[in-house]
Amino acid sequence: MLNTRHVRFSFTLITLYLLSSCSQPLSTLESVIERGELVVLTRVAPTTYLSNKSGASGFEYELSSLFAAKLGVKVRFLFPEQFNDVLKLTTEHPADFVAAGLSITPKREKNLLFTPAYYTVKQQLIYHYRTRRPRSVKQLKSPFFEILAGTSHAENLRTLKQTNPALDWVETYNTSVLNLVGMVNDGLLDYTIADSNQFQILRAQYPMLNAAFDISAAEKIAWAFAKTKDRSLYNESVKFLDEIKKNGILNQLQDKYFGYSKQLNYVGRCTFREHLKTRFPALRDDFHLAAKKYALDWSLLAAVAYQESHWNPDAVSPTGVRGIMMLTQATAKQMNVKDRLDPSQSIEGGAHYLATRLKKIPSRIGEPDRTWMALASYNIGLGHLEDARVLTQKHGADPDKWVDVKLYLPLLADKEWYPKTKYGYARGHEPVTYIDNVRQYITMLEQLEPSNTNDNENLLNDALEVQLPAL
Image (cartoon, rainbow, N blue to C red; front, side, top):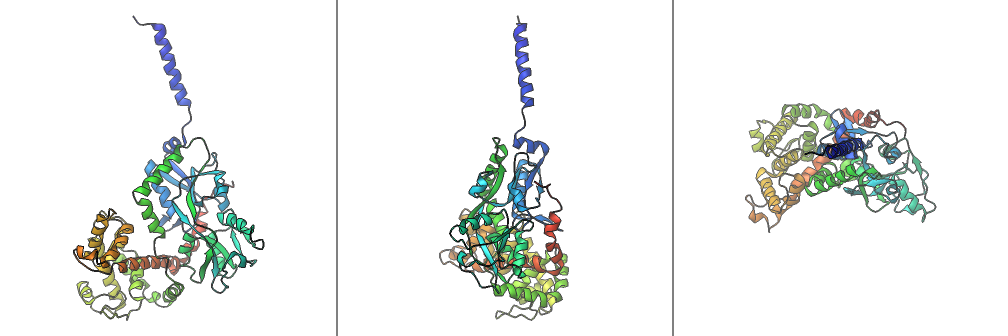
């Protein structure tokens, strides 16, 4: 026989448990999943987030988007009016965390909880070639030295001032590193400071600028969360970052945004700008038409052409390749090019041939790896590329990722390895340099080509239309 008092008591306990469970607040991770949206505080910069007619891009944009996809939610970005506002993250803030290329510093760690670092940068003093290059902090005595307020650049300068009392600078809030670098280029400032990865991208736009020296040791970059007892979302982000480090995705992202050549020198950058003014205009329409016909990016096609011939329609090499795209006689015949020295024919033939190389790359290989491998085969041949991919796989790396394959291509010239390959010896370092240069030329084209100039100048203003209220 049932004890009704016991049944009523048990029912009451269950009811109270359910009520208490329902009344408990959601964790930060559960809140993100419930609302179906991850809100990220970032800043507009070449290394973090940029948006134009083609859509959004940037290392932090893509990294945050991958995390949101991992959680099964959408991502939304917030842009503070001033850089210093990204440091004011609290539990009441509408953003879930900061992904803005923040350096981990002792001062910031007092108020923010940082994830493990996912890459490192150095802070560099930027100057114009017409200004005498300072060799050390002791030589920084110019009144025209301005930096972005609230940054770790300012923290490091304050530390340096303790042993260099004459050191002086101005900190400004309502600007960006991009604008400050531009002011150095225009002669309005003598110096500013930029992170090494920022300047690596910007120097293509400003060939007269250079880095005098590093003002700090390498600094670790990480995501930042508000300090709270609830670390559920933070812990999930740590797991995510660890996972993409182990599976190689993080390395691939770094290569995508920061992996192209860092060695294009001052002369090379200036020569490119000169040729962009004098040679490119006559070829612009041909690049756009051929790219459209073969479903290619016009800047990729133009960059390949510059790597091949510096846009010289009469270019001829000792090996017999000639024209804008430096086609061999056999390739020209295969692509129905009658006159290799005719710019329109050469560009269309090169576009056609590059399109055939893309089709030869296995469909499972995604972008941008697919394009870089197609370019490698364009340069060295599909057989040698396949040899390099086999070597990559034998060494336990990913043969479908350019960031891995480019490490093993040089082995094709190593007498220990090339006898073991199907197609034998090849100068495997050449396609690596070739693609690094093409990537640099693409960046400079996108920054400097007149049809894109206005878009790039307005990126900061466009993005800042979506701002947070004053914090």
